[in-house]
Amino acid sequence: MQMAREEGRIVAEDAARRLGVTVQTIRRDLLTLAEKGKLTRVHGGAVLPSGTANIGYDDRRALNAAGKAAIAEAAASRIPENAAIFMNIGTTVEAVAERLLGHKNLVVVTNNINVANILVANPGCEIVVAGGQLRRADGGLVGPLANRIVEQFKFDLAVIGCSAIDGDGDLLDFDMMEVGVSQTAIRRARRTFLVADHSKFLRTAPARIAGLSDIGAFFTDRPLSPELQQNCSGWGTELVIAGEGPSGA
Image 1 (cartoon, one colour):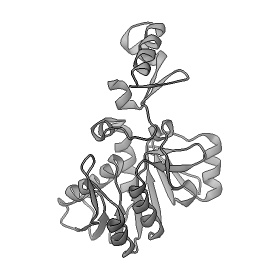
Image 2 (cartoon, helix red, strand yellow):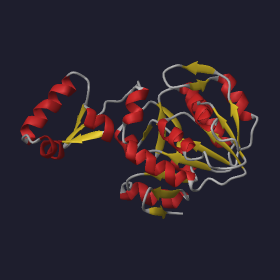
Image 3 (cartoon, one colour):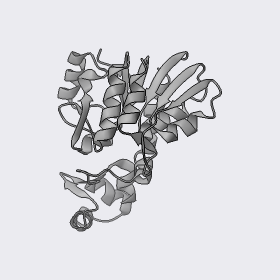
Image 4 (cartoon, helix red, strand yellow):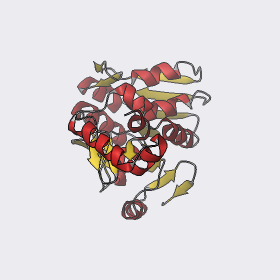
């Protein structure tokens, strides 16, 4: 389970090698965990379950920390100083905030209390916290009030995360009120950065935020499927694989 939380999925052959047991043993263990609802079986292994409820926030923090750090570094390096930015809810977005502590003359509007607390350490950053209903589970502020506040701004850049990405490029989330705030921010931004690691392709969620066609640049940690990468190029969505440099438009 720790391997699943850190990496997003278990590959049976890899787990057998790392744990010094047979692949058959791993498959039996994965079946047992799937029957208990802790994992979902997929071809070659298992992934963390998803559906109508999100993974716990502490588990999300631990999930693929190295990949998120690389994504955050790549995205932060492309965020200019002297800019007005929106940042939404999510652990990868928080990782980006940590790498903005040296940026100067930023105005950051956020519905994420964790982002605000991180950026307090940057004296060159003015922070505007969108009001709204507080989700204690992750420090998010959601709902109509948050929407109205975000609507008052015109952003140079919106930095957003999501809970899942469908194979056709739809960005998905679990909370309709959170989705509404993110949609408003995308609409009010001149350009949007999506920061999401490969585990988001292994999950699903019920509510659509937008499509990759609505995103200026997508920062992730592993290559996309050839079809989706080709679609991104057609949509004009820049694809940045952390550590590999940009591709696409």
